[in-house]
Image (cartoon, rainbow, N blue to C red; front, side):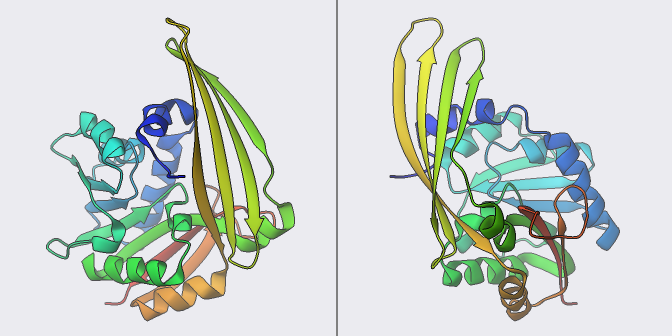
Length: 251
């Protein structure tokens, strides 16, 4: 089973229409400008349909969003402007032609790196394209919270003028690999034609612990690594599923 198929991408913005991209972008912006007041541009790794990036541009940043899904980028490009650009690119193949003041990766994209070697390569690539003192900010699934709370089966139903959609998420915890295999079963019904469709996707998500991330980041040239609860800035605990990491490239 693949993930982020053309079918899944077509419904992506409907799946997450209630997500508060504006408040999340404001939080990320405050963290970047607090650590690096002169930051003017952002590279967004795993930008999806670019909704965070639209908000970053409103905060005055020049933004380049990348995603390995051509389908996602096709949707994101509909919002391109003089401050906002998108391209199809894998984080493991980042070019060093241009450097950035800050790099972000949101909505747990980092958790899709289930192999340590791939995560290490991503961190090294990010370090190379950041200016000295540049900020790297990402969120991820926090191991202690995942193990305490345990992922549960969830059902979401969404509807707009065109579609009725049901998405069933069935998680399978693999504690030896620190991975949750999330199986999405999606059923859609066209409200106009009555036509129905169904498909399945597999989204493997790795959960992380502070020490392993600190070691990999330090090896890639980062310092002043800090962890906090995403959006609130509170201290993290076993009740904090979504954690934000903020690191700075060595000068």
